[in-house]
Length: 109
Image (cartoon, rainbow, N blue to C red; front, side, top):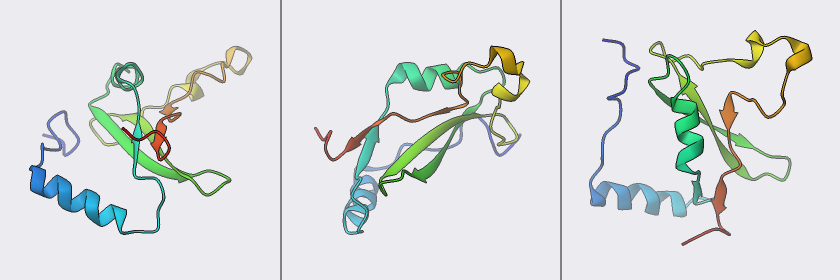
């Protein structure tokens, strides 16, 4: 079985969750979390061959951190679809990645 499969990851204990999030809050990074809707995640996971998501972190021009979500196959590679399109039919909204999440702060529950 590939290292990259639908069972990778695990639910963590409340103590581990608390430890990780409290350690993060002690850093100088302002963004504490990000929210992305289920419809966006499911759109990525429905790509043919997708077994999971890769989350890469980026920084915008203002220095704010953003998670960027990509569908990945069983080899761990990002599933690219835009490169297969004919340039004349390219839709800039048809990307391989997802962001536009709600960062906390300011969107904190």
